[in-house]
Length: 204
Image 1: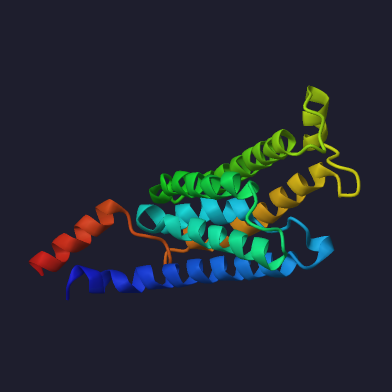
Image 2 (image 1 turned 135 degrees about the horizontal axis):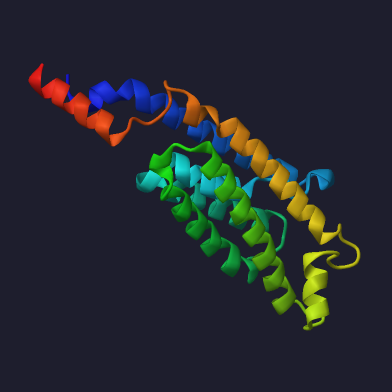
C-alpha cells in the first residue's frame, strides 16, 4: 500500500464537502441576486478566506476563481456590464484567498472566523471608498466618503445594512464549515502524522 492510498480515506471526504459547500454557496449567490430581501447575503469573504484556508496552498485559487467567474456572470446576466468595480473586486478575492491559504495548516476555526470577518470589514470599507471615489453621485469630500460608508445613496438600502448582512452570512458560512476543521474524519493530517505514516508504510 502506498502513501497516497493510505491518505485517501482522510482527504476525499474533506475535498467533497468543501466543494459542496462552495457550490451551494455560489448557487445561493445567484439566487439571492434576484431576490431583493436577500441582498448582500452572500458570504463572499467566507468563500474567499475560508475556502482558501480549507483548500490550502495547492488549491487556494479555486474559491477566488469561482467568485471571479460568478462576478462576471452576474454582471453580464443583470446587464451591469463589466464595469470598473471589477478592477477592485477581482484582485481582492485573489488576495484574500491567498491570505486564507497561509492559515491552512493551523486547523483553527477561530482563525478562519476572525480572518473572514476582518476581510469582510476591509472589503466593505474599500469597496465603498472605491464607489465614493469613482461615482459622481457622491461629493468628493469627507462628508461624501462618510455617506458612502453609512447611509449610502438615496433610493437604495442604507450602506451599513450591507455590512451587517455580510458579517451575518460570513459567520453562518464559517459555522457550517466548522466540521471540516473539528471532525477527525475530515481533517487534514499534520506533517508529523504524514511522516509517521510514511515511515510505517516503508518499514512494514
